[in-house]
Figure 1 (cartoon, rainbow, N blue to C red):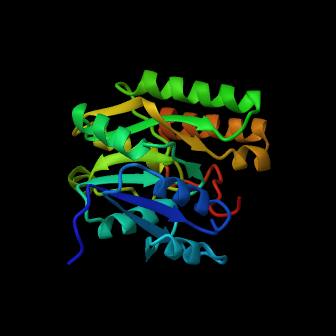
Figure 2 (spheres, rainbow, N blue to C red):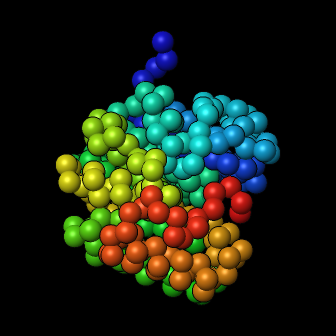
Length: 237
């Protein structure tokens, strides 16, 4: 029987051969080692699975991000789940810092601030505004990007995990439901480095308008997230 871990890290993937090594390398450099890594793959058409296995990850069949995260969680052996996207980088001591603050703060679900893997002024400004908004809204209308969400496994299972019928904003939906049953928070530190590949490929203005539109339509107006009004591609960046 496998040893129970303190944290189960779950990463949804689809054609992430280029970016996944950066995340997994940053995980191996952590001072904290009591974790397992589960990669839930769609499956990919490139070498994503081979990369995951090379780093000793458990690989499971995934799908769209919400389904992949749920499938990964089914195999998780820890009481705390940490959902990460494949194109981020963790600073040194990230896991130990976040887990300590998660436990000492009495959180049931939490996220952190994000910083762009870019020196572009517009990217830094956009991330600053996003972090500010999330912190201001955390007790009113909780938000958290799927880049990094930590949640107690018991609570995750209690609320039914991610809603696989949602085409977009499934991450915001999860933390909102979690916050109804436990303490949610946005931590200033630690933080994660996030790829700006979508901004570069789609264009910063176009992508910014897409994010704003999704926030208004799905989170303010209340249009069902099952409706494919805004296209959010997975695995094509």
